[in-house]
Image (cartoon, rainbow, N blue to C red; front, side, top):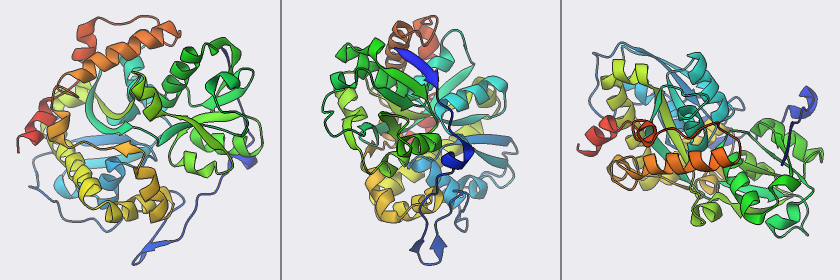
Length: 353
């Protein structure tokens, strides 16, 4: 497998997001920074929490953006200082964990595994499953004649390195036996659109909302397909051990806010799509379409042995074993590293309420 980094000019990379009216007096924001008027806290306010929390978020249509849009943390923790910081990929969030510049944030299961493994060995824990990734993260190609992964031999495929998309792509290439016959380039989502439009790449494994912008291509494989082959991926939330240990009350409120957001996604997806549209700079219909490729889990589900209560640690270790075979990490850590890399106290507390 040949790897390189593809650079695109700033002029080409400046890709506009869609905007327009989404509901009564709410408009999409190209910057994604627009928030609704903060609503009242949907559960008990905790005035005792005074921590500063630096949160890394990504432009991915899930409950994290609903929490941000509604100002739930700000309403429920009025004496805490909450700062939201946008990141392009989970790999960037891992770097921020390593540098100590964020306390918690969204990253995929592959970046989380890399963080817990050598040579990084970052002191962090998985605290929440934002979503189980399905068709919202897919391999899309230009050429309509390409109908199988084997036909990608000799092609140039982009993906954000150290992401769940990268992990799924490596698994698909490995299964097809063409790992060494494909040139991989490391591109952030916004740069991917520009490279796609200029014809610099033949395809990309990428997630929403970027995926929906590649309208002149066709999906060859989805993350739901790779999950069916035994390679599931997740959008997770992680936090540094130091922050978790110092802020258990914040962690419980944060988790309750995320559980509130999942309830909105499951019970009123139309209204949730309006809020997501504002944050992503797209239309509600587009947001609704993107949600269809993700599965959302309540705290009661996440606390079960199938997820954070057991299987997540096994999944992280399995991911590490694959990443080691691909040269993405230098060593698979001891099993207890991955089991201790999952923080379940907050999700258990919320699940019991």
